[in-house]
Image (cartoon, rainbow, N blue to C red):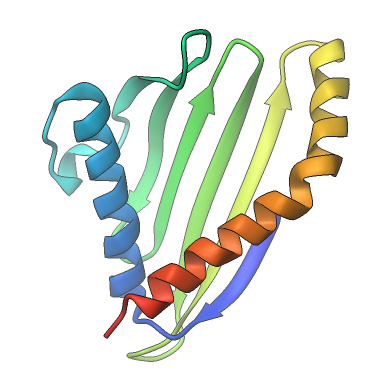
Length: 138
């Protein structure tokens, strides 16, 4: 999945929103307070419900340019990347890409069917999140 969207916010504003969210999630999940400089290669386990947990590893982070992370479960692995391209001082273009690798043939088939059914809603939800970030810029 790939989404490209022009945003009416500075690249630095969008980047800070993403990083603030990541730092909050890490603090909420692990109890640890990290700085942005500690994020690269940081790994933690997040429990989603009684049966589902994932290892999240921050793989790439570049100030106002890139944020990428890997989420690994027993069933599959997701790699998500935000790439931020400044257009000018008040606008940027965001490219969000996500790749999934399933563990096993049956899981791959299940993920393919689920992806087809839920892909539209996932994109819609992601675009809504981008709109919320844009509307929070004053």
